[in-house]
Image 1 (tube, rainbow, N blue to C red):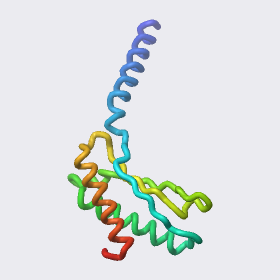
Image 2 (cartoon, one colour):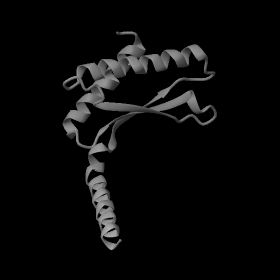
Image 3 (cartoon, helix red, strand yellow):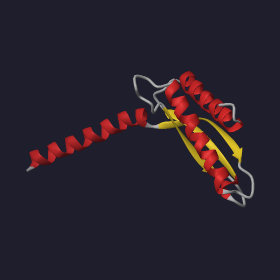
Length: 124
């Protein structure tokens, strides 16, 4: 019984160490963020158009920077920032995996926000 308990304890400690060692590679960090004013009053069409443009910018940037078919080199997050109406102002964050170099991460996020600006202004 002691041998089994010892083996279980060793396995548990090894699993904890392995998770801690590899967790930093899976973590993400925010590289850039921008705030956007959607205005008041919000209507469904404007919000739909805005979110569609965010998705288009994401897909275009992911395609530009995909590595061997891997399209998830970055992610974005939308956070409401409005005071009265939470979604009258939003902040969009561009985030990458911790393992990515700072220069590559900045390049990707700059491209994402440039593509987003172009889609929002109707240049694409």
